[in-house]
Length: 386
Image (cartoon, rainbow, N blue to C red; front, top):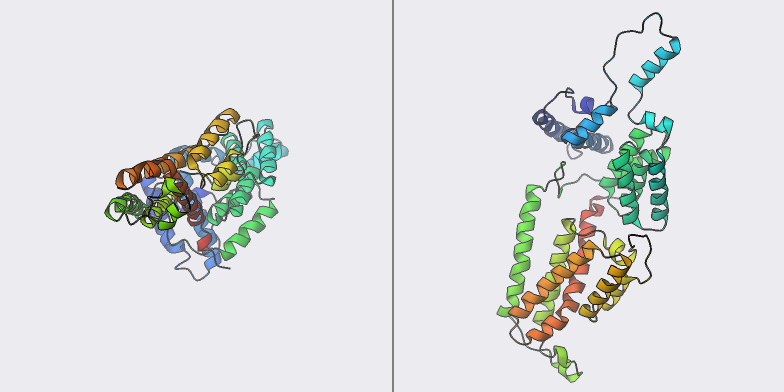
């Protein structure tokens, strides 16, 4: 039988349970309901999602306090003889109504309606990051906004982030039981989602021990790789000088491979640690603070960065500043590219100036590739079975 009730009832703890009790109870239920050990995979996956959802809310003091406000108060004494039958029915309904029912009856606030409408238009135009931000703003105003959670579910599903989509659809159905469409999408995802065997984050959002170890190892390898430029510089590529590419005539295949490979690893680490937003939103479907752009600086950077990175980066910064479309993710990519190029130039014994001027072409390509690989690994797409 599927788990029912509010979050306290799902976890089997009292409303005044301590955080330690909630964590202990979550670990017990996680072991019992994990799809890896259950016979009915679909049912256990559904219960496991609800258990995790309840834990994430109750273990966070701020979320727990907000959630407690949505719960009905303890049953009070029976209405007096002077109380009308209509008032008694209203009192009974208020105790039994599911969280979010009140907001569904009265409708959304005007500012929330506008945010939702803008989010729907952004989603249709495939501006997923913009749609996501608008939905998060709506939820910050009304945490029980079922439509915002449903749109977030669609966004995560479009990005192949199926476990996140399941959580959002679950919220949408909980806050609006009449949302049949979200229920269908939730059921479909649950029916084909395999259990997560490795998680980059704990339920409270902190990094797991495995993720911390992988970060230490990954960044250590990224630094060590650059020292190989000095240890194994290689011989200059002969045909570079033959084809009048004198600016990079001192480059070796070792240099190109090391700089590109280090860029891939750095881009992967930045992306998988959520230091970079989705590359499509930053490089393809970019937008300014006013919602418009004239010069598609992200596309220009993507196209011309491999040809002359310094020029493309300068153009991006100039027009991005004018259009208010500068991206913090792209600026982090610039910083990472600069560090790789600078260290490579210091390590390479043959042509330091040429590495400084044109090394960004190679490093930038590697970082963008690693950026996309990180998105694929974070998306849980590899955890699905058809």
